[in-house]
Picture 1 (tube, rainbow, N blue to C red):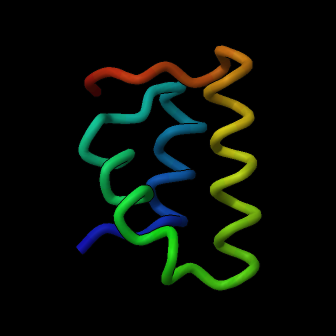
Picture 2 (cartoon, rainbow, N blue to C red):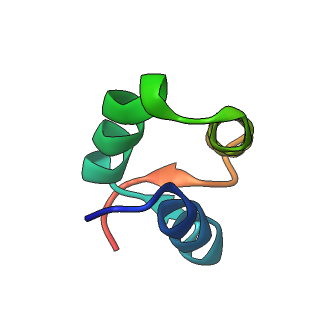
Length: 57
């Protein structure tokens, strides 16, 4: 089972997020609490700025 925190940490560490991880975030966004929503907003910002790429690890 994927965890949002683990996805975030892996993405920041490797500067890459996979399409499967993005699908998980998108598919579960409605169930996230306020803290998790802030974490997804930060992840979105990092992707938009180009600090994190979408690809494979």
